[in-house]
Image (cartoon, rainbow, N blue to C red; front, side, top):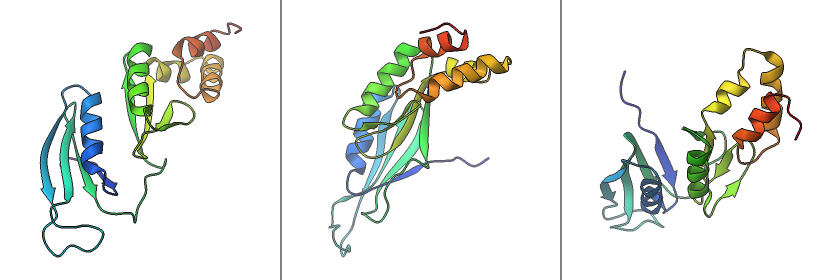
Amino acid sequence: MPKQIPCLWFDGQAEQAAQHYTSIFPNSSIGDVTRYGPDMPPPMKEGDVLTVDFTLDGQPYTALNGGPQFQFNESISFQIVCADQEESDRYYDRLLDGGEESMCGWLKDRFGVSWQVYPEELIRLTTDPDPGRAQRATQAMLQMRRIDIAEIRRAADGVPV
C-alpha cells in the first residue's frame, strides 16, 4: 500500500504547529521546510513558509500554509491511544495548552486541530463482552471531558460514585 501522509492546512502557523507537535511526541523531528517564491498572491510573500514536513513518532505529516480559505473542524481528528491514565493526561495537557476541551477525550489544540486522547483500556471497557458492563462504561465516558479511566472502570463494575 502507498504511504499515507496527512497534510494539515494552516493559515500562516504551519511552522509553529510543527514545532509544537514535535515538542510533545517522542522520536519526532522537523524535516524539509519549503518557502514561497516570487510573485505570490497576497497575503503570502516571497520567503514565507509554504510547507513543513515533520514526523511524530515515525508517522510523517506535512503542514501547509495555504491561507484562510479552510479551517479545521471536528469531522477529522487524530487519536492518541495511550498506555495508561498518566500518559493520557500528559498528552491531553500538552495538546490542550492554549486550546479548548470538548467531550469524551476530545480537544482542539491552539491551532484548531482536533485530537482524541484516551488510555487504551477505554476501548476494552466500552466493548466488553458483557453488554451491561460495556453500556455502563460508555455512559460514564459520555459524561466526561477528559477521560478518567478509573471512574469508567468503577461505572463498568457497577460501583456507585
